[in-house]
Length: 190
View 1: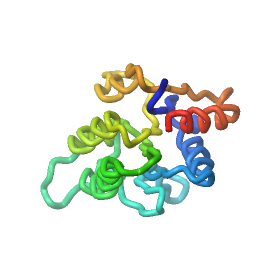
View 2 (view 1 turned 30 degrees about the vertical axis):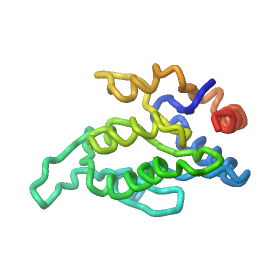
View 3 (view 1 turned 90 degrees about the vertical axis):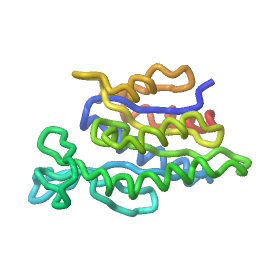
View 4 (view 1 turned 120 degrees about the vertical axis):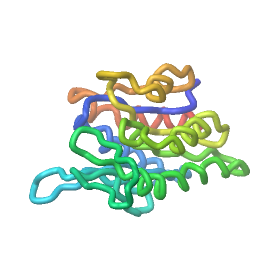
């Protein structure tokens, strides 16, 4: 029996779109759900970065092209993007912490984490809280992880190989047909 559900696949394949659609289906059926997703930020048709967006609609910066931090802190970069760790932690960590404190609910809550990727993993606090949520009896994690390439990301590989995690590999061919199966699998985890 699975406890958590993750989507994986190449960048731009539709993982976030599936997370949105499945989250809406779960929410409309009365399933307690909270979390965050990442979305591209574009300016004049060009991607300039990524934002973190909570399911309740709050936005925060995850990264921007070449945006430097003026306070002298270490810059974390992925390619041309500079990651804003404090902005990410300010939005994501309270949601994850809240999931750990919902122990008196009769029903588990679904915790959306889109995504557990290279940018997010610069935060040691995030890594710690994700471990706790994955091991919690109160939460079902519904998230996305990148396809392995280059140097493996330890937390991503750990998630991929957990016995209590169902991983859906998203492709152009199957992405439109998987929505109901994903929603059913998440519901079965609850």
